[in-house]
Length: 296
Image (tube, rainbow, N blue to C red; front, side):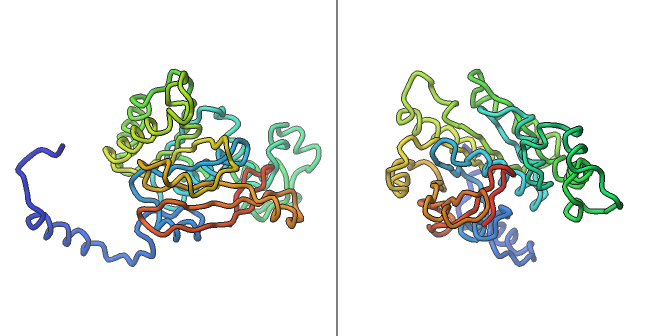
């Protein structure tokens, strides 16, 4: 509840208009860039509120959520926090390095000795990682080039003891460290925040309500991933099941389109079934599990 002298909407309107006028920037979207142009346009950018990302297990939700988190920090120069319940920091770092360097995750896990043995060292110096052939040096160069925006990114390993209050404390701490009220929050496997003794269906409205309240109180975009254990259901059904979220995005594997892909990639469809800030729609992505990379 706001404190201080009560003001009518008429009293508040002039200052609000002045705030809008003070920004001379021409914006194509209202919120933050996602790093995926079509997704940014569909969502009208990432806005404060709760976005729920729903999909079956092993479809790439975690990889998509991490890539989105990285890209928002990079493209908007804002702090981003990633809360992981099912993955370790080392694994998430390897996924990021694979995406940035083009080296497969399994190769990176084998270490510098393996990469030097198979690829050797570049025969001539190059200034940018994307120009370099596959090598340990390319991996290090990609990491070096990413340090500026990685300094905005914070990853937290969570377990069954992690509570909503812990997440809020971490958010407030990062915003204080960075001296910024702005931040993106991503929570992977958000169902772990609910009562483990109850079913997923019973947990869903309670977790969504708490996360939506957190996003509104702290005035920030919050994306939470949630498993869909009955993927045969129509994606649009989630719009009715999740009334408390501002945006609901359902991830679905496209088996038919996957057959048309020549590389070891998977075709993924994102159904935007609820969107208070923009339009509903369907977007297509290609997912490379080896590089933990989604492309529109």
